[in-house]
Length: 414
Image (cartoon, rainbow, N blue to C red; front, top):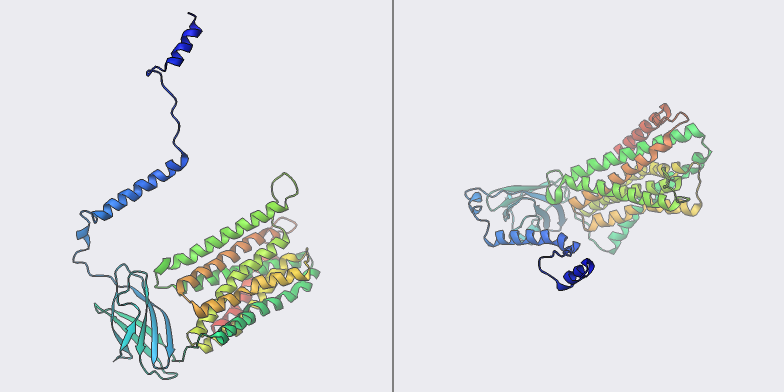
């Protein structure tokens, strides 16, 4: 018998001493396997109630961390919404209003971690008087809520939300549209003037980013629920990544051939990104106005309206400046103005209805990240004939832009 025939016979006999190739495990099984093992181990530890760990918390007093999120006043009633930001449950046992005991009801007898509860206090408050509401917990801790000047909280009906929408128009849409009237001036400007105006735009956006971050941190100062200050940074990072992805997608669509996408962003795309960034920022401004009216701070709301209206007029300039060499049609200008200004309407309605500090801080972070990312995108357009980005003209423009926003921002705080 030939050697080849012997090999064929061995192959057909299926001897056990011959190794066979094993089929690899499915990739989905390799991915789910560790997750299943982790779930099994955690479930086993939970079933055993953490062996040797139960005594760690013995003789340690509970830690109470409660923050006030909202105060609303109606005739004979003060409603205080609080949230438990600590690791242990909290119970409200007493309520003092300006050192007087008051009867109250609450939506939750025990507030679990991250839960909120609304405490309704029976008290005949007087218009214009200041009050200090002290919520006393079951172990003697105090949660203080202050009312500088008592005023009835407006009813949330159809007319109220219509008013909020109008405030959004006054603060967002109209000022941005007025600022875009600088378009003819921008179109007639020469190269050095355009770079100066672009520098002003970068300064405007840089100030908006810093201002939004500062406002977001102030909102969640002392409030660690849902991440606290981390919510602001997370919002900024998400917005920057989203706009970067949108910009890369739009550049890829515009490439003329099989080569790489253009390294610089087109002026129309930049104007769109500026409008989106400013729109996200105006969403946060609308939240501030809506929440001010919702809690009865009518004077504060009026001041915010006037201040934001003047403040936002300069934002229209930031939108049209990238279009100096590529003027758009009227329809595109209207669309850009609505993208930048209309979110203030949504923000005012949200602020008046479902105001929550952590959510507001996150949205402010979105605005900060968006305008900061757009400011970075504008930097290549600042280069002069010598290739300098920070020339004397652009540096002066950046400083002027920040100074203008700072000066008009003082009107918001007045």
